[in-house]
Image 1: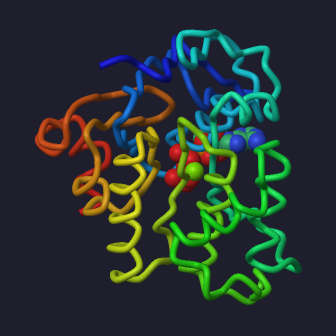
Image 2: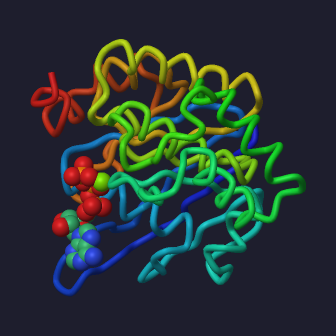
Length: 237
Ligand SMILES: Nc1ncnc2c1ncn2[C@@H]1O[C@H](COP(=O)(O)OP(=O)(O)OP(=O)(O)O)[C@@H](O)[C@H]1O
Ligand SMILES: [Mg+2]
């Protein structure tokens, strides 16, 4: 296996707070990799560094073996890095279709109309194409956020708490979607607090606590790691 994403010694300081310090982790191509840890551990901050919204105080991000630190966010999405946001970033006054269309156009794909249609079909949202995004229930809105991220045809998809606010049936549907994305060779880095989802779909997991990686391993290794149980899983169970 080869690493599609490599995070090397990344630190982010907000004033007196070290949101990330000395973070090293790899995301292997073709996997679903979990990124878990308690609130405030630095998960969203790491996503922001990977997609270029925030510059690290120090450290390097490599995507497909190339350093991308100086590449602006927009360019990173055309390189193949897509993401969703923990707080949804939909255009609430536009239709579901137009939300995906705008994302496809911004990503500069060929045939944005076709791409938007394809993504709605993949996410099971075609029947809601003309619904105004602001009127969607949470489950469909979360899926729409994923459709928008997929519209740029990412090789690496960063998902920040996609199951937040979903009911059990919707979470099952999301798990199936994640497996489908894997079968389409899309590499996924998944931030989630829903441990049953994480443990059912992930090939590999990294655990962040207070800005540092405290463990990396398979679902089995992580579930039995005493440091992870102390810092997070004990409370999350
Ligand atoms: N823009 C900011 N300015 C100052 N501090 C910030 C900023 N963004 C995040 N932080 C701090 O950085 C740390 C990491 O926050 P981050 O949002 O990355 O955590 P998280 O792991 O995503 O948490 P959650 O599970 O609650 O989403 C926290 O201490 C947070 O308060
Ligand atoms: Mg977060």
